[in-house]
Length: 233
Length: 313
Image (cartoon, rainbow over all chains, first blue to last red; front, side, top):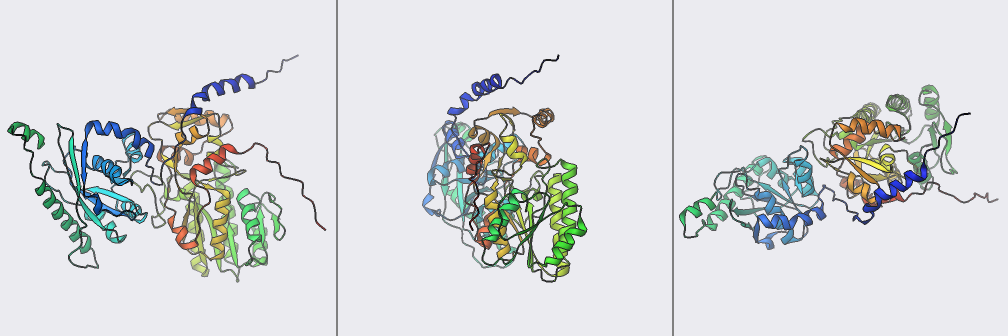
């Protein structure tokens, strides 16, 4: 007579309970419509502050409810858009999404969790239509106080969604923690255009506004010239 | 009309004042007590019979829900065959109905695909670019219906549903998430959104009532990652880096929860869409958010007792 072997349900159940026990104390989180995880951002915030001590100014220019396109300057390898987005999120109490995450694991998904969007006009347009604050950056430059060229396709998303554009001048040091993110007043187009010139002109105008704000920042003055040069990046 | 979503749509349509008579076709009998609807038990391959039933009824509105998601009720090959047969029969029959004004189709956000550098939250304006077999099946349905709609001059509304989860909805994603040990992509853990079956049914009723003539994304607000869903369900997460997915899929299929290609894609690349246009066009808002649907998934009883049905004279 063959013996009937039964699956050890009780043992398997007990093992599962033991394995799952630590999970009972884990908080149940979720992400927002764009995949940003506010809890992860909150956890990473002290780490970010170890690297950047960001002073924020001009947030009163930003709308309290509607969407807006923010444009910041970018120094090569400075991650200006990341620290500016984190600092502005904290200052405004609204999530600020930065544009320019790669779409490759594990960097891309991680950056999406902290508010990154792909550098695509339709992605920016979707976020602006959902009344989000979206931060794009100029083309990176080697000098900390030079505003690079702005991708007019991305600025075009603001025109199509009829949302305001604000310049955000950023400044950080590659050796120190001190950083600054200053929001300027809304950039209003000088001429009303119906065609594609509207986005080109608005992008150029925003770049000029940004450059003026950066010129107003002035250079670093510690009194020790080599240190100033280093801080200039 | 025999599936869970079909039964829900039929039950809700019966309560609508603008619905005079209702006829349904499916391979399974209805799962709810329907008082007004007439039901025909037919296989997708019985094209002549389906065409007879549809043309003799001559509806004003036709709702096509006959989509077999791979590994939900049938394996990939059968799902592909059944979906193609049903689409040919139903959409073909629709073209022969002189009174028909509108056709509403079930599609899915899988039609957008998740190729590299595609939008995270595609809107209805994004061209379909399916990257899985299920997405291609849905894109074929949309194409067939659009061609027929143009040819005979009827409105064609396409509801692109997020993965549908519900009490009795056979869903490979729901089945996977309810396993005691659930694999997830450790390097990506991408977010996805879902829709509850009751909310999806309400969208079909609203689309039929308004004679919808465009695609709409139907998606619950909010999103969740696989790890977050697993933790919410108090399941044991199994982090997987890449090549082990082959083994995980085999083991999961052995355990009774096969993981089709589009669910693997969801785990790796996420699946979101912009559902704001449905609110503008249909005035429709899902009642449950994505995290709530996931919570319901884990809260469902294994046996649902419904009271005895007494006939009232």
